[in-house]
Image 1 (cartoon, rainbow, N blue to C red):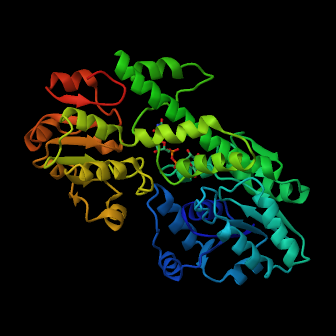
Image 2: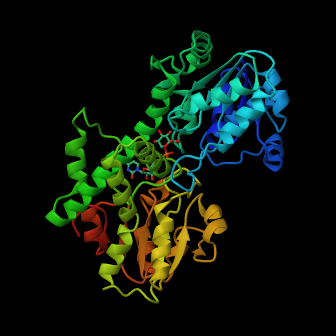
Image 3: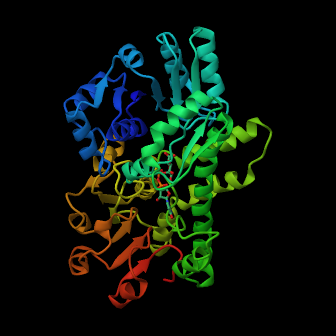
Length: 434
Ligand code: UGA
């Protein structure tokens, strides 16, 4: 199938590459000339495990090309994916200007039937708005389809190649047929392609992310309570998660959810509800609790040092909002750094992939270490913000030598509590005994 993907951000690039992998001819379009040039030269602009291999293979075989030429891409393709940013606008609602702008450009270029698919996370009613742009600009028949993306950063390729489900919002039989063919190779194990109307599909995406954010937030509150009543959240988590109705996944407490999706999507759903005079109370609480949870590690630090950390020096392991990504958007680590520095402390950080992005954002606030151990040099304590595998089994003898004191504040519960106590550490984690 001939496909165009408009926008080569995270979703667009993974979508384009994975669509090429099943034999489609994919043209990826971006307005950023420098980025397009880099990709043409074989450079993958993001860190995502497994993407490199597919990217290079499909470029080499001529199935994946990059261009700034929208007209050529539209002419060549029957199916056009839009994977464009929908940043929160000033009022919290998603800003649709990129999507509606692209729709207008495309509508001026179409000369025959096309299927326009929106992959971005968008408010309910966006497909109708996009359709209206086409109706206003052209007589050519187009189907505007909602097809939200559920992939997770860090496992995006696997999620795309073997999705739990594919959600497609369209009432057009013609579009359904084409998309059944397109997605067939990805659901061979029997996972469903769920067809529904456009609005239900758009809402499904927000509801899914908001539910997951709620699940995490619920466990974060349970963890906070565990600390007060002397219970262990790891035990509680297993006890709760073994009920199939609840499930084991996404129950890990920590220092709040971050990233480019959950915070934005929960906010957007609250906003959409407000606009429809519905008070989505549970999500409002989720947002509020998550804000507090992002600096809970700092509260613990302040309590330990009796509210005085002026002149203290901390090592921070982990910057990315989660492992296996270089993405630091809304990362709890950034809030932790900010709070520590405001209290007069200094911080040396290490992250396997996220340091470049942090340098560009707040490079003047922290020191960057070349590896996880040199970050510890002369630090009063170690703080852990991201559960990278490389932090899971460190050399504690080395840590002993480098850290001034055996003090660890762990926002991701990486270590065995008893072992840490046996080794003589003051080990403060989330939802577990001290
Ligand atoms: C999330 C969804 O999981 C994807 O299904 C969705 O497609 C994506 O948003 C999106 O809308 O594009 P992602 O943001 O990549 O994916 O990351 P997650 O793995 O979902 O993690 C989100 C946050 O929740 C992270 O900060 C993570 O540390 C936190 N989390 C996750 C927990 O605190 N506890 C858990 O048990 C799981």
